[in-house]
Image (cartoon, rainbow, N blue to C red):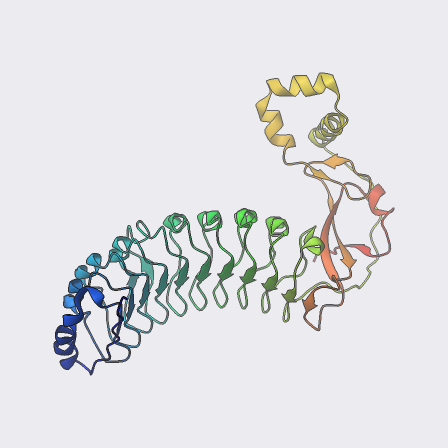
Length: 360
């Protein structure tokens, strides 16, 4: 039977002496707690505990990680919360068994080069209450990560590489300075909880509507006016959107205009609609011109007539009732969805809950 030794230490300088005395447990020592002992330096004698599984050093005055930590290859949980670190230490890459890493409440403003390299088994990373202004592309190396919390930082964007963390089920990005979320978020197929409270987000990406496992979405306190098309089909259980200037159902008189299209738009619409009808001549010819394929791949489909268009459209809002299965904010009576229509002709055939968006 494996024994577990739990040690509590008095403030420095006694902490180091007591740790040395406690090292008699040797390889049998599994848990060491030095919580709130005013320690300014990690004890280098930790290297003599190769079987250590949990190391709790939160609520101290540690500004650097000792190099001897690289011997703790069996460590599965490390808590360095509420210390004085200024970066995610490069020494983390040696902790190949680490599953939970708490670095909240420091002064961390960057990841040291290579810090993510050896953390293939990490499932939880807590970086709340730091000074991060950006997340490195190397975050994508944390292949096992299921929980990532970055609340209360200084982030104005997140890299698309973060969206390649295929196992991520919870992502917290509240109280930052984000203005947008990358379209690549659609790749987070296992995401169940997304918190974006108190940012500067103006619009949600259409890729969000591909997250069929998403159950909780909190976007309170942003500047979102309208939701992307398909949003109403999400299988949410909770949706919170207080303090957003959401469009309300207030019809405005539309100015009747004639549709004027460029030659490129006319040609593109013809080609796209013919391809949709599987015109064999055009289907074969288009394979010879990859640049044309790239252009028409950006085409969209009109919700009224079902035909395709490229660069000329009318932006509208359609109001639909929220799902009865959603637990929602009190202010959300109708969900405003962004709808694109190919022409004024189609706009005049719209339903009673679809309106043009007045350009201010």
